Amino acid sequence: METDTSSLTETQIDQILTQYRNGNITIGCAARMAGIPLREMIAIAAGKGIPFQYSLDDLKEDYAGGRKLMHLGLSIVHMRSFRNC
Figure 1 (cartoon, rainbow, N blue to C red):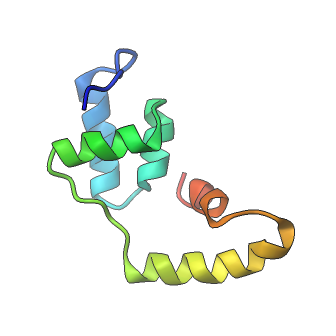
Figure 2 (figure 1 turned 180 degrees about the vertical axis):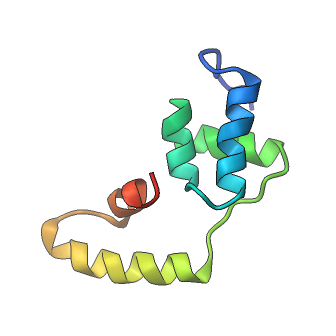
């Protein structure tokens, strides 16, 4: 998959992905920092051998938070978008 990361250098992408690999930010946060779609960031990470990280604790947190947000009309995607970024 070809990506349009012309606004960022390879080094900048690598620095962002290092933060993701170390668990400091989510893949969604990494995508926002790079200014590219989430699907594209996942593809770049996979191409660099960085596995998608989503733990059981993430699932439990998303489930609990999602139930609380349902009455506000917000989705789990909204919650995860701002959790670590």
